[in-house]
Length: 103
Image (cartoon, rainbow, N blue to C red):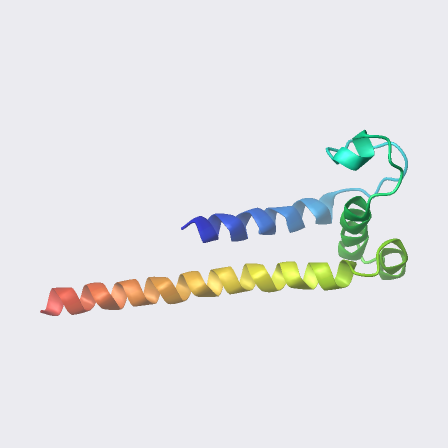
């Protein structure tokens, strides 16, 4: 069941990213590197690049962080995998219950 929570959280991240505006300069962040005063953080760049990608601004996304497409693809694959495993687990659970009831 905790895996479903994982998939739900990742799905919500994608939804939030898709409705988030892309801001440059000063913006709210919880990034420890950014809060420590570092200008460039690979993680922050990846997040903003994924937001750009979800807004259809592919060229800008690649320019900001070339691995954004790869990261977003992995995220989507992980969500699908977790949900597919959940469905398979539920089917096995139901079939086991049917066997117990018929015995």
